[in-house]
Image 1 (cartoon, rainbow, N blue to C red):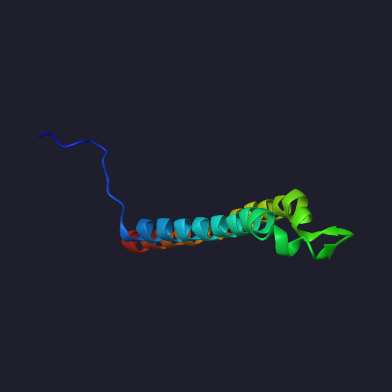
Image 2 (image 1 turned 45 degrees about the horizontal axis):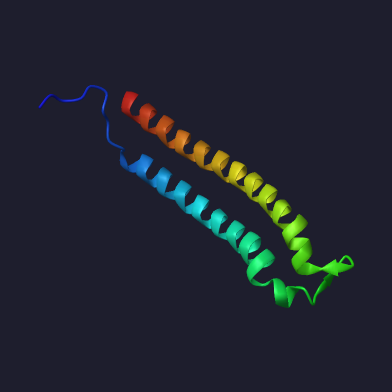
Length: 101
């Protein structure tokens, strides 16, 4: 068989980067599912007895709260990934500098 040109496996830093990325995505999706599905559907009956701004909490979560949580999760993801990208790039730069010097 002929070896593929340009094919490269992930190194350990890249594997850690993707593991952290997937863990962050999984956690944020779990929060989104809990709020969207749980707060608006599964727990609608008990939350309907709780008043929030003059309406039932389950209705508010289904109509406004889930959207606000979703927007917050996008912001959290962007901030955390920016930090993770900077950490990874710093590690790569430090490794290149130590190999050159």
